[in-house]
Image 1 (cartoon, rainbow, N blue to C red):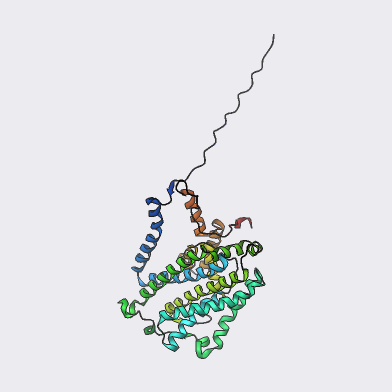
Image 2 (tube, rainbow, N blue to C red):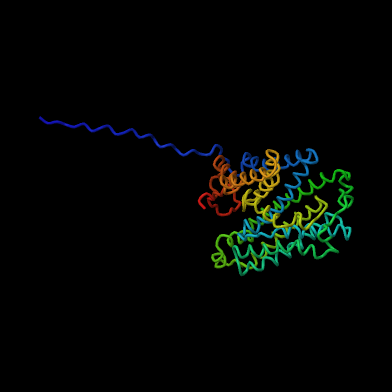
Length: 376
C-alpha cells in the first residue's frame, strides 16, 4: 500500500498592477495640442489684466514681483544654465538702478530711454566680472562675485556728487510721471510701471527661451554639465562664460532700472547690499534653477511669503516662520516649485509626436541636473 502526500496549495499571488498611464495624451500639431500650448500665454495675460484692476497697494506688490522676476531671470542665466554661482548680482541690480536714477536726475533723460543704457553698462560690468571665471570656479568664483557685491555700496558712497553718497538719490515724482500718450495721470504712475514691468518681463522670457535653445544656450549647458567635455567638443569656454556673465548682468541691470523708477529713491545701504543678492539666489532656487518660469515663481515666493508670514504672527516669530516655510519648500521640492509642477504635469499629460515623425520630449526646456536635497 502506497501513500501519496498532497502538495500544499501555492499561495495566491496578487496580479501585478499595471503602471498608471497619463490622464491625457496629446498629439503634436493637433488642435487640442495647439489649444493647450496657447492656454498658458492666454492665462498669463488674463492674470496680468486682472492684477491691474486691484487696489494700488496690491498692484505695487505685483510690480515688485515682476521686477524681481526679471532680476532672477538674469541670475538664472549664469547660475542656473551655466553653473557659475554668483553672490554679487546686487551690484548689477544697483548699477542699473543708479544709471537710471542719475540719468533722470542729472541729465533729465526720459526714464524709458535710460533702460537700454543701464543694460549696456551692466553687460560691460558682467563681462569684466566674468573674466576671473576663466581661471577659477566654484566657491572661489563665488568669492570674487561676493567682493563685487560688497564693494558696490562703498563705491556709490565715494561718488557723492553723482550718486548722492550715503544720503541717497531721490527722483522727483514729476520726472517719473507716465507719458502723455498713455492717457494716465501722475497719480496712476503705479499702473504705468506695472505694465512697463510686465512688458519687459515678457520680452526677457521670450529672449531667454530663444537663447537657451540656441547654439550659445547649448554651449552654456555643456559648460555647466562638464567643462572638459565641452572644451573637447569645440566649445569656446572663455567666450561662453564671459558672454553668460555679460548677458546675465544686462538683464539684472534692466531690472535695477525698473526698480529705480518704481521706488523713486535710491540708497546704497538700503536695496543694494548682499541681502539683495541672497534674496535673488533664494528666489532662483525656490522657483527652480534652469527653468524658464522658475524666476516668476521664485519672485512670488520672496515677495509674498514674508508678507503673509508677518500677517500670521508678529515680531521675530514671523522671521522664524518664514525660515521654516523656506526649509519646507526646499525639502519637499528640491527641484524648485516650477520643477515639481512640471514633473507632475508630465505624469498627468503625455505629448506624442505624429506617427512617422521622431518623438520629441514633451518639454524641450533644458534643466539643471536634479539632486535630492534630502540625501545631502
